[in-house]
Image (cartoon, rainbow, N blue to C red):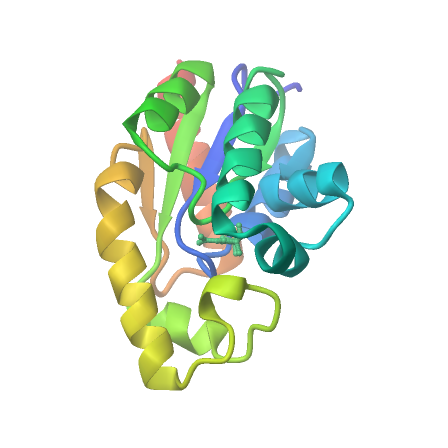
Length: 177
Ligand code: S3P
């Protein structure tokens, strides 16, 4: 990894753009990109909806926690976290000791628009738009106290992908000086 000394972890709600932005950021920084959900799926040899269906959410969270701890200690690249993977204060503290934690802060209305037709996220599948909004609102309220401890917070509203990546890079430079 040439341009940042520490790994970068992207957190935020589902639909906030963690994977999309993470890939672009990794390209610009000549760093590796990984997605925590992909790693969990590979390890379990099952898709996330199947893990939820067959093993239940608690087993998914356990696998998510173990994979996050393992992966964060590798000390390289950009890792997009799942929306629920900062499950508690201990995990936030752990991740922040391993690298830079970046929070993509995206308003509820934008998340609802982006996730209306999402098929492979078990927590929000088969919902009316109103139910989706209520569910995302509830999850966001629960998670904000953890997300907001990130080193870097980017309000993504009105920004293009390019602008979001530039904003992250600018703040990373400040941290790494
Ligand atoms: C979840 C978010 C998903 C995935 C799972 C649960 C959540 O990841 O880990 O469906 O609890 O918010 P993305 O944030 O990448 O969609």
